[in-house]
Length: 361
Image (cartoon, rainbow, N blue to C red; front, top):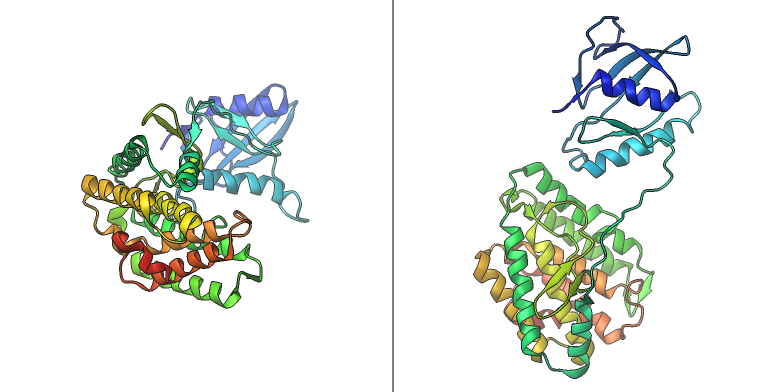
């Protein structure tokens, strides 16, 4: 692990106090020990500081957080915890005060984040047309062009290429399957934002879906050999096409590594979704696109195991597209067909992409 240098700590404290600071000791032990040689320490353990500001000797503890499998796998997990602690420590009576929160740069410097209220992200601007516009056009016309089919293959090839990057981290895979159920943006979070009843579907049905997904977690959570690089939110609104098959993706979500079925389910269910809006089942050029996507991906990866693990991911994405929050204007027939799809996919031993309409009954 990188070390925390005395020089970096001194410069940070001088920024924090807006003046000169004399660093007297820096130790990993609870009792401060003065000395000329100040040792650097790695992240993940408290560092006890003694320093002088304007003639006054002060003591503080510099706390860092190590990566772990208890919800601290990602850099963003650890940042979330530290930022919350800075605010929360100071709002509870009799709690030790937080002086600041901060971050380490790759240069070894330390910066303050203690006065932060919210974070922002600044990205490049890219031109392009959302892939959903292609699907809307095909929904309305009933016809896919040669370019549409080439784009299906390009998207399957792209996912096959990023999924080829593997990571040996069993606890992280288990965490990603756990997040599939419990994360606020995933299965339980979506269910909790459904109304009491929508198009004949009530709380008992949603409870049944959630309970079945818990069973699926136990079925697949130990398949850590499948952990790979993923996008995490690979739907048509996050894909921008320019000419032919030239595209850019947006808004990668929920971590760099995960189950490849996440990305496959997220995109492929939209061929069903737009076909349902047109004709109430998967047919015509949408069926051709759906089969082409799956066949192209499997020919590149030979990942037939995907068919044994994808069910809860299809259920998650089914809950998204059936949601009256995200899609309030669906007809009852379309919404009920999606609910049928979710229920029937979850009770099957594996997913048969060649015969999707069997799950709509």
